[in-house]
Amino acid sequence: MPSGTIIGGMKKLLPLLKPVHDKLIERNREQEHWHGDETRWLVFAKKEGKTGHRWMLWLLRSKEAAVYLLDPTRAHEVPEKALGPNARGILSVDRYSAYKAMKQVIEKLEALEIFPVNAKKESARIIQPSQDLTERVIRRAEELRRAWAGPEPAPGRARESSQAAGRAGV
Image (cartoon, rainbow, N blue to C red; front, top):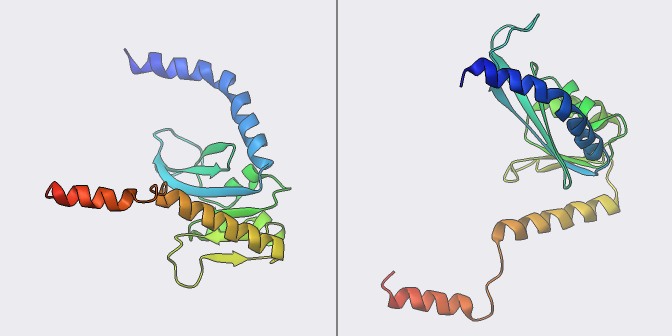
């Protein structure tokens, strides 16, 4: 199938999918905890004022929605605009400095969690600390720890499994 046919079909889908994307952004703005990340994405299209093909694919994910944004820049205005002016809560991100420059981070967000968690000094920076926020962050960290650890083995099952492995010569 010629690439022009595929591209033409995608262009026809855009007006149908745009309202869905807008609703995802709207739903994401209603949340209180987001995970943000960005990665380079090569786009072979010409855009006035843009040199090269390196664009950024941004992700803002909450418990209920994931929003992907393709933008020619790596500027803080991209996640800032996507979260909206009334964002309140916690934004979990890597160490990229654009997140710290976001208007919501400076003025409104309760916390900016900096990952990776194994960073010695700065695993979380609390902007407006409160007891409620501290408890929420601790609860969320425990949920994440349990999720990464996987299900707990039934009592006695761990020993049985290791004994069976020993008998099998593993």
